[in-house]
Image (cartoon, rainbow, N blue to C red; front, side, top):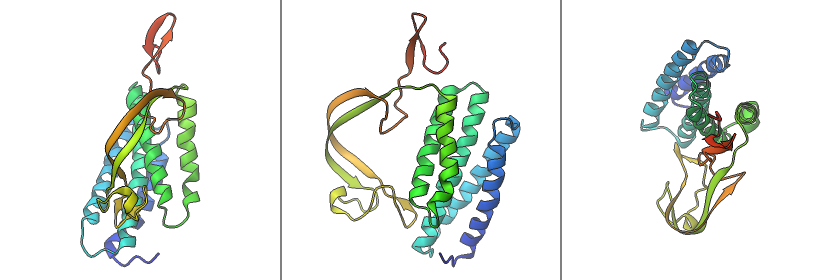
Amino acid sequence: MIIINIEVKNIFEEFDVIAENAQNIAIFTRDIELQKNEVLIINLFIEKIDSLLLKTGLIEEELNLLLFLKFTIESVLLEIQMIICLKENKIDLAWSALIQAQGQISIAAKNHPFNPSNLDGFINRLNLYEKLLFPKIMFASVGGIIKETKCTICKLEYEECEHMKGKFYSGKLCLREIHEMELEEASIVENPASKMNRILTTTYNGKDVDIFTLI
């Protein structure tokens, strides 16, 4: 990949430093105040990326690289936020941060400009968090007939456009907007489309309790 814009080059180089420092802080035993400060540092870096994404004159490859860097560093930010929430006994928020991190890095991997396997270690670590830190839970899922969808890039009917869901185009993520859907069923599943829709309670010692804390 050839990067022409000097600001994009600088962001790319700064990303390596920010990401390395963040990974060093994204360890459970690190001091929580250091982790909270790292969150501020990463947010400032993300603001730089957002500002550059709005700049005119960048080529598509540069815009997509910037969005890739944003999604990747956001996933590390969410990892740190998950750890902070666990330390503060905010288990619901910790789960939410983890699931968002998994989603962000999955999209980043699909759009990696060089070698997607470079993210495998991080992806595996996030998956291990889910298995080791949280109980096995079930999820709510809905099914139905999707009647109208549109592409977020070109606004055409999704079936009529050439964009691919989950791919970057000139610094924007292609998604499928559902405009009309006929609901057919709601069910409890182990592997849902979204792990944000989890079951909240379980029965323990004859009582309905929080599925994470059993309290």
